[in-house]
Image 1 (cartoon, rainbow, N blue to C red):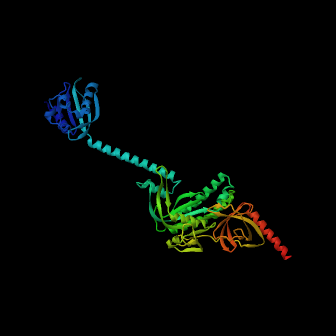
Image 2: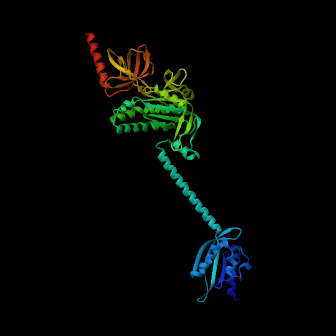
Image 3: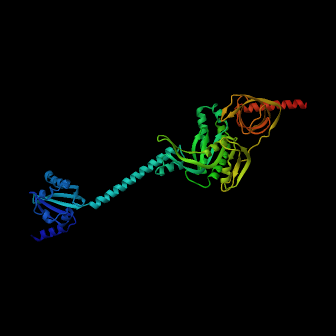
Amino acid sequence: MDREQQIQNRIISDLSEGVMVIRFDGVVEYVNDAALTILHKKPEDLIGLSFARAFFTDVNNDTFIQCALDVIYRKARRHECYVPYNTGETTRQLRIVSSYLTDGDTATGIIFVISDITELEELRDAVKAMETIRGLNQQLEMRNQLLQETFGRYLSDDIVREILEAPDGWKLGGQKRKLTVLMSDLRGFTAMSERMRPKDLIDMLNHYFGEMYEEIMRYHGTLIEFLGDGMMVIFGAPAATDTHAADAVAAAVGMQKRMPALNLWNVEHGYEPLGMGIGINTGSVILGNIGSERRTKYGVLGAVVNLAGRIESYTTAGQILISPDTRKAIREKLEIGETIHVSPKGVTGKIALSEVIGIGDPYGVRLEESFSCELQTLETPVPVSYMVLEDKAVDDEEQNAVILALSEAEAVLETDVPLVPYQNLCLEIGGSLYVKVKETDGTRSRIYFTAKPPCFKAWMEQAVAVASVVQEGSET
């Protein structure tokens, strides 16, 4: 062996890549140490033996064997493949580059250069896995964003976030939680809606709900659902807080403070002004996903919710009434107007409801002074007929009465039958005038107007004009 050949053999033997030479008669002529290590073989297992004898009995390495056969049958000058190779103890990933050995222009055999790329494959698999995970995370983020944008139109952001982040967020079930419930409702809206075109009605409601929702979100409220023209809102869930009662009161004040500007918008668009009442109650409720597997809603249940609705029914337009439990739960200074004692359905005995005018720091919000219209005594009482409303249903029995004093906001009504405080009535004045009884003294009652018909202004002007004429005649 000449010196050049010795140098070549030394270089090949020291290579980290495996080198294996196979003659065309199929005999393995040469294998370096790296190839023996990679293939998990001894020199006597390969050198001088036929390739078939050395490998064909190894049923676990068909792909490796086929790679060698492809070089022979495809007559390629250079061939590259990536194959798994089973050593009996582990499976490695090999890169095999093969080409013909030549003596001048004559091909004498095949040389295989074998690289163990197992670690590279593992790294590539890890990178691919990371890319897959990254892609899945991006898809999950996009999915959550889509769900947030979609369901955010129907649920509050807090509810959607809880559903998406909680492992069992979509499951049915509930928990007991102390929180505050706010109920709002528009006065006389049913009668108003009958006079409006559907498109105008929806436009007006959407604007109203949009304005109210901003105040609800400002004070961390969660809108549970729209109740026709009303809303049910909770404070203290899904995210628990110790200030839920105060937050609810501050939100209610903010909602009422928005009403004047909202009504200016209504008038500019040809709609009637709105009046809203708000009732608030605090206590323990059942909170969670309610419904069936096919249809689920996030909701609250319990007597606390029912009482909040009852409290709201006692309010007049622009008024906020809170329960004793809500008042007790608030540490901040409250500005209270009148206190009324009522006997709501489902409650034993009377409870005191407090009218909220404002709440102190850190909220620092209060209602503006309401414009009080002085009652004008009518020299000639104005006859009217009325019907009693029970749970928003009109009693068919019509009663007769007369109005003794009148302003744009209230009146003194004399009836044949004594009325009950906080009773709701519907007066017929050429249109339906909805009122709430505030005070009674025998058959005389002070009533507040909750919803006026379009003819109210003309009717009032006529009533006052008649009274003025009579008064002038008597003075003469």
